[in-house]
Amino acid sequence: MIRQDVINLIAETPAAHGIFDKPTETKRTVFCEVRSVGMTEYYRALEQNLHPEFVFILADYAEYANEKICEYHGKRYRIIRTYVDRQRIELTVEEATVDA
Image 1 (cartoon, rainbow, N blue to C red):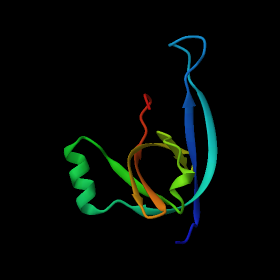
Image 2 (cartoon, rainbow, N blue to C red; image 1 turned 135 degrees about the vertical axis):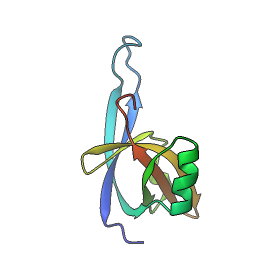
Image 3 (tube, helix red, strand yellow; image 1 turned 45 degrees about the horizontal axis):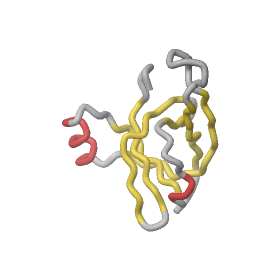
Image 4 (cartoon, rainbow, N blue to C red; image 1 turned 60 degrees about the vertical axis):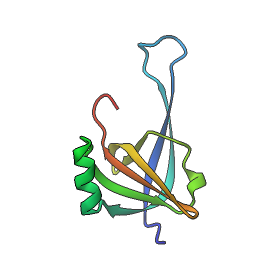
């Protein structure tokens, strides 16, 4: 696998002071391969009101720690699906909204 690109995985920790405070974010950079979403997967996701844009493939599934948000080229994405295949993991993402 050619790991030619990088993404930032973003973990969120709830604020200690109250429910209305923004969570603390921790970013870490991982290498990945970027692929487009397949046509069948794309249209099936639309039926569920999801809008997948990319699939990021990490060479080792241990690099992923259940983060819900990632950043690619300065744009935020919500991780909507993960798939482990042998040692690697695929993260399917859609553009994050203000709430994500």
